[in-house]
Image 1 (cartoon, rainbow, N blue to C red):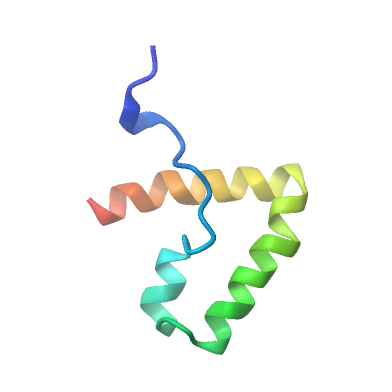
Image 2: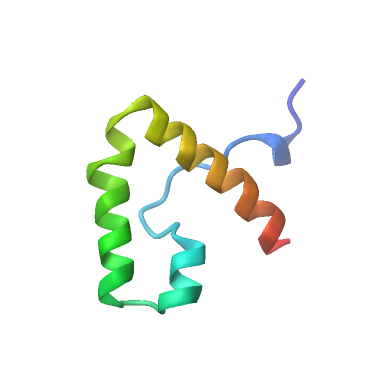
Length: 63
């Protein structure tokens, strides 16, 4: 049985936590990262796996 905190969080368009901290909300670089995520990473299996990994790691960091 999976524990709730071990599940992959749902994808959210504003989920670039590290990039937001580094570059700030609304920055051009942050928008570029989000565009790359949406147009490249989400369109292939390995990109989606990377995003899932990112969300698992970021949960540990944010805690």
